[in-house]
Image (cartoon, rainbow, N blue to C red; front, side):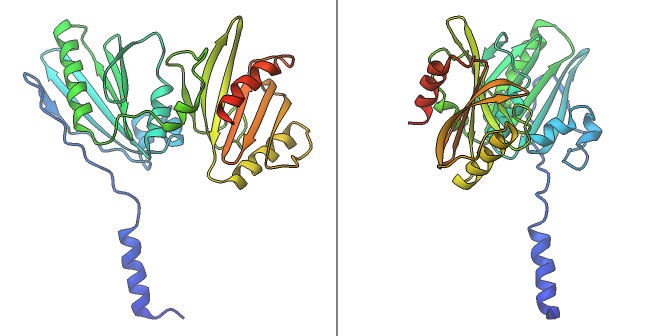
Length: 283
């Protein structure tokens, strides 16, 4: 039986290591604008009250909390939403779901862009969205000024997730990289993957990179994929397969240690192209 003094101590410890409290952001002033911060600070418990249609997507990317503020000057309104996620991989992931290579990119945080007065950027574990109601030129200029001030204010480094540096540069489409947190290629057994799109001559294909927590997790994922596609279990802790995936057609799969590489979009007779790109990651 647990001693009552120990029980009291355990309760006290649990109180201290309970759920991470929501972080309240101190928004900067914006000259000439009236700032309103009287908005709820959203957490995973109530994010559906903010936007029920996108709540599951944000939660799948390690959503922690959301702070909102509005700046108003006459009919001009600037709204800013600061989402905090568990790490920069997840912040990049949610940012990349709303990014297009056609947007006007800005030197903002780690990376940002402006499209039709909407400014999005990420830095560290933060993803920031700024919306303007008016297309007034001065208002748009002030929105970019606010974005820069917030980017400088937020903590965290401005580096891209390290895994992105592992992708081969040859043929890679600029600003099309993403991070998929769940259900990669329609399979729930793949534990998240970075994706980059490539163009090599007339061929367009995608390369997926998964970094697992351990070689045993790599092995478990590979076994599940091979079983799903009717292949025999692997006999070694590294290897390459050409799979027939009912969802995705021919799939080139390779793995070693904590790394899994998947290539889709190539035909079965293009193994030489797949091997070229796989060998640049798995050396």
